Image 1: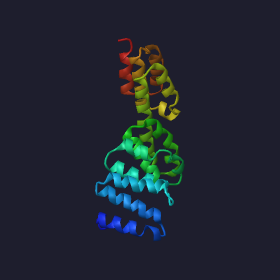
Image 2: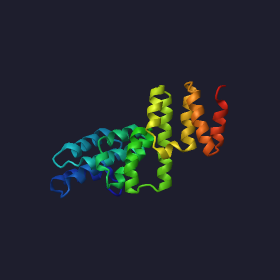
Image 3: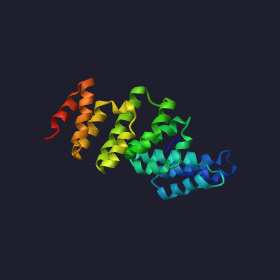
Image 4: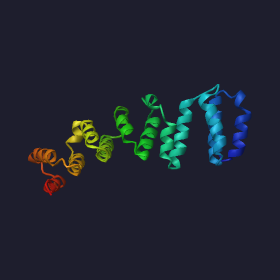
Length: 212
């Protein structure tokens, strides 16, 4: 297996599975060998056995499936492979990283926001990285909500933590969406309140657009 002799490795793995101390590992490596040879149907057979067979290890199957999907850029497939695995992510840094990469690649901002507390607790990211990820996620949620309706926008804004609301970049996204929807009065009040405390070029520029 480790020499890349996939066909030979799979054959040996299956011949020895009944006497293996860890049959789940045999099925896992057989699935990966099949994937490496481009035999997705065969890989699926082994993954299904690994997920629900006599020696099932659904977590190992999910991790392997998601890694293969991420490596090939199939982010939605990676998300699907990890469905229902969030509860097992506590204390599992590899699973946390895979969930983060899958949600980020699929632009699943709601799930990414839900994952932030676990990432923080696990120390998977330093404070700067975590803050950047949070800002990107909440900003994207605001933009998406703004593309929907005013009620969705207000709900998304209410869901932003205080530390995110205070950021000029996040505030700018919200105000931009307000202006698009004709919420000039609300945008003006919010910008006036903010600019009295601190000056920010992007917010000043938005203020100048009110009423135009």
